[in-house]
Image 1 (cartoon, rainbow, N blue to C red):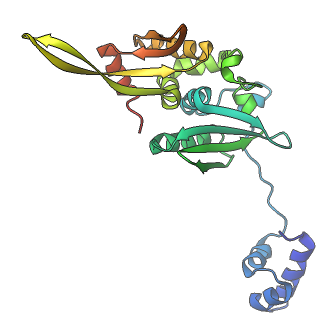
Image 2 (image 1 turned 120 degrees about the vertical axis):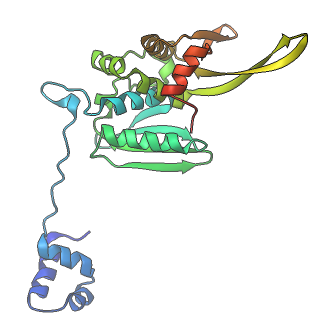
Image 3 (image 1 turned 90 degrees about the horizontal axis):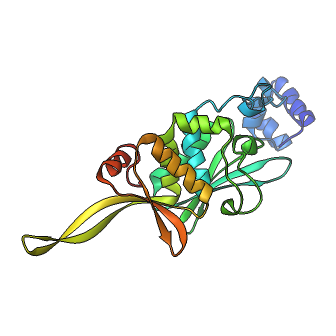
Amino acid sequence: MYDISTGERAVALAAQGRSLSSVSRETGISRYAIRSWQTRIEPAERVGKPCPRCREVPDPPEDPAAYAYLLGLYLGDGCINAHRRGVYTMRVVLDNAWPGIIDACEAALRAVRPDNSVFRVRKRGCAAVTSTSKHWPCLFPQHGPGKKHERPIVLEPWQQAIVDGHPWEFIRGLIHSDGCRITNWTTRLVGGERKRYEYPRYFFSNKSDDIRKLFTDALDLVGAEWTTLARGSDPFSISIARKASVALMDTHVGPKH
């Protein structure tokens, strides 16, 4: 990056009728930079959209459906870390086996903060979809020190209103982070012969009682029946296995992709 005085000198030389190539050779500045300075030397001020939560009268995010999906991803596999100069990094770590979910996560981050860059950090077996902003804690007040399952996770009223308005997006985000669709099997006696019977079901597993409760509240809202499965004495997983409820999940969520 060059200072303004350097740019002014290069533009002055070009204004004398000299070619951009000769000015470039003399100054060591690229022809592209000189050409752009002939139009404007001062850097353009970047003006992004203000954070909707930081306005005098706070508003919800402009794309509530994308926000509901991103909220589900964040509560499952996301974190927010303080960076420098008051900037925070939102990071959602997703399995490379599901490229469609990685794409959907990136799209949601861009929709929620359109003026912030989004990039992917590839690691062995996974990708960290990342975006930096000063306003991630404003948009996700569940951010805090320590692990999510070791602290209370409670939605703000404005967040709950978004989830109530877009429950399937929220459910999809939670399933895409900490859930799955599998095929179970059992056997039955049919005409005296034991036959194998397969059926699909959905699971959601999370150590946080609060996050599991948010998931089951959303399931109740859409009319999907669920049961709790314990791992030892710990109620760790939520199961959706009834045929009608699985059909609902297949319509609105579907297998990971």
